[in-house]
Length: 507
Image (cartoon, rainbow, N blue to C red; front, side, top):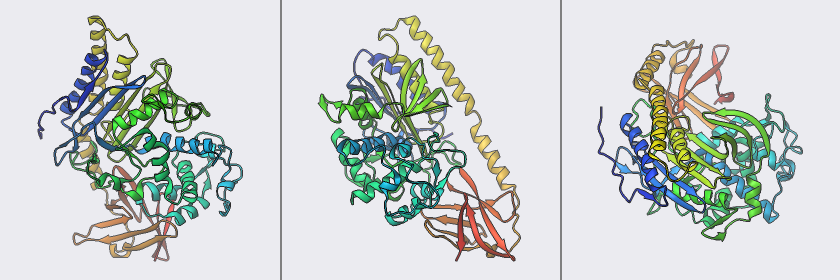
């Protein structure tokens, strides 16, 4: 078992204030315990807010495991879907300025686009931002979040091909990136510098979020530290995942990097009706609107009982309180942003791991422990502390049990995949070639000198393995997401390949 140097809990990494300071020592212990028990030093950064102040900051593990670069409070993490409340706020600020309305229809947003499969006159900005638009667009999601093969013109063409979602009527909640991706095309249409710059101008800069950006290329500037992506479920868990975010895969539904204290400033604005550092950064009316229930739904996510959605915020029943939250997950990242308006408290937890530190595992446990501290009297008796310790020890043991023998289970799964036999009806070389989609680029299939199939599409690539049906490969173009690549044969000749219902025709 590989060992790593003990991670120092120094003043550079831990900042505490108020009478909670001693109690947050426990949080540091829990995080350190997780790093040690699982022998996995991925990075974690935490910020806790009470009122108008950050009362705790802590960073642990490594932003880059291979290079042993420690995570600090100024490390920026990709936050995936936690981008949504930021983009939704930018849209509401545009409404406040008179440039947009929640009732503006897609037909009005895009008067020059012909939507031949959906009634764009009935779909509004509100539908787009509350996941109630009633349509889907698989190519748009893959192009913007994974492959990176798109530009302004192709995105316009893609949204024109949006299709009704069979299980989602207009007005019914169904979580998706598509509504946010669609509205970002309007931003790009209205503002030549693009939605990313608008987000910076309307949200990041006013909040003085100095190490936050919607462009990965910004992290190459001096003074920036970026957490690299890892996964506890990876074959080599301490090795960086190959699929890192680039500018072309930063999108409005999941396209930000930020530090924990930067996001804490956003949470402070939520708790204080738009005020930060005693100044009115955003109109109070806009912040209040962004937090209001827009659509009812009932879903469970770990300990979070979701009952509705606001503008980029899930509304949850949690520890007998109402919790606003949005989590983010992607290959090599897990983000947690939440707050309780009635209690004037909030939590930010950022990680560069997508599995062990997900919001159903260690991050959920850490958030629960923090809220236990915040929701109880500041001065705990020894008996109360002992009770909390016992409760948290039990919760941690459940996580350990959940991940028990995970390496062996992953190895067994890989062995099962390796044991599959190819079910190809043609010689291997006949499957190689270039397969083109009219809007989202090409999938290339090649054979290497070891007679292994390779598949690539934009930013993604994978070594193919056998699949369980004839004339199909299994590929992990996105780490941890094994999917079939299915070849369509006509008269013993391959005409096309299908990936997640998208058809790529052979050139």
